Figure 1 (spheres, rainbow, N blue to C red):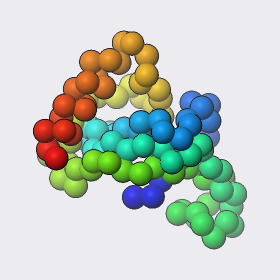
Figure 2: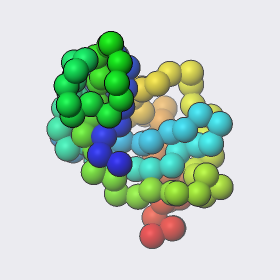
Figure 3: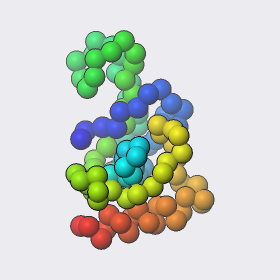
Length: 108
């Protein structure tokens, strides 16, 4: 999986190379942990590098995936706030980060 696809959002504009990325699937949980390879990218309609066709810009964050669960049953169970992309670096997410790290490190 080369990149995390995103709609227009303020938070993803703040991503820098080296930031941790958690891939969350609604109703499933966290399926992967990755590291941003660079800042967000915006591909305009008609760009041949786009993953999806459409008339709106495609926002991406290039990611190197470090751990990935192919089976939904192996995901880290978590109910995300209703958002496509949000930051979890705040202290209140410390236990989430620690639990996700422990979950994926036990599987490698």
